[in-house]
Amino acid sequence: MINDLSHKQQRVLFAKLAGLAYKNIKEARASSKILGFTKTTLIDIEGAQVYVFSNKHDVALACRGTEPTEMNDVYADLEIFKADSASGNKIHQGFKEEVDKIYDDVTKSLAQHKTKTLWGCGHSLGGAMITILCQRIEYNLVQDVHTVFTFGSPRAGGPNFSKWCDENLNHQRFVNNNDVVPCVPTVLRWRHTGDCYYIKSTGKITQLSRWSTERIRDKGLSLLKTIIKGRLDFIADHNINDYIMHLENDQKLENV
Image (tube, rainbow, N blue to C red):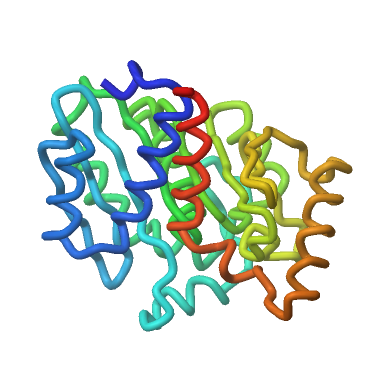
């Protein structure tokens, strides 16, 4: 049972599941078995994808992030106008349209797992999608969502959507140092949801507010070092494998 894992073990698990969302069904099925899931189902509607990983006790949804070669992903990222969420609050139109494609099939799949604990995760675009998807599941009383884990997620909605999620969803959001994606969209009063866990340039993970002086100082010093080296880390810090590496290293310290 995932609930029997420590918090650090849980976040490593869901970072790996978020990474598996980029894999084909054969690879995802084989790797998820190693992680303790006995069944893997892929829902793929017009390029919008979510994996459903399940076992006797748990079911986990993992939305796939942006694939640069998938034009619907590019359109979803660029379509920044606001639409209504399930609760009537404003959210990113492109992300909403991706969730619209998969929602009915997800609810049909969850009907087979009513007694199990539901979790959600996603990286990049997948992080925004899983936030909107789990908010809709929770609002429509389809099933209680235990926890949502996102990694390098862009902002998904406006202030009222963020407030609703903060009050009704357990959302743990991870940001890796100078990862640029969590900084967008930057217009139209977009907001993040959930508790922010910031991965410092040293690899240390700490829970910080968005504008904490510690976070600003760490990002600035890290950026300066990369400029001196002639390599910016905006993109490198966004890689899901980088998130997994830091989370695994942090978990190892727990066992020392």
